Image (tube, rainbow, N blue to C red):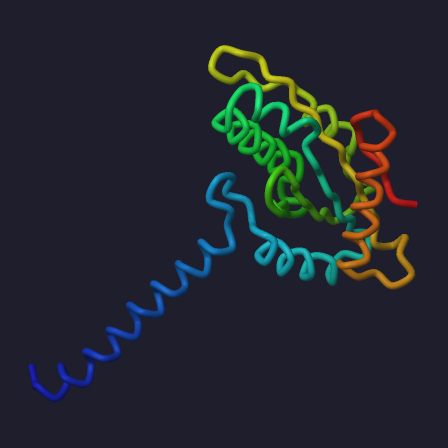
Length: 183
């Protein structure tokens, strides 16, 4: 093989390997290492895309109830197991109809194509099923707030997140764990 060909191909190979490494790092930065869900940045990009394509889309905010107590009573490993289980339940409920992410701590977010076609009661029921952890049944509960983008004067993600957040705190503040839709 000609030395000139090898000499000119070596930098190209190096840049290709470097590009692959950077692509993997970017992909991993957009995934939560504990739950495997999208992080805020990864979820936001997907949510914006879904919202543009589906005018009946809705945004959900989910916050685990009494998570600090669970951590303090059963330890951080149990808390991590609760986060992983919550992520799995959200992922299963959402399926191919949207995307879910973890904002951080015990807060999760989702966007679905059509709130009317989704069974929010089924999600709430799933999130309230106990978790079997190390031979102990741990109680899980979550407050869910949702906002249909069609209900907003200007359907945009930041406003939908704010409305879903208010609905989630309304559900939490009423002392009843469950779900609430922004009105």
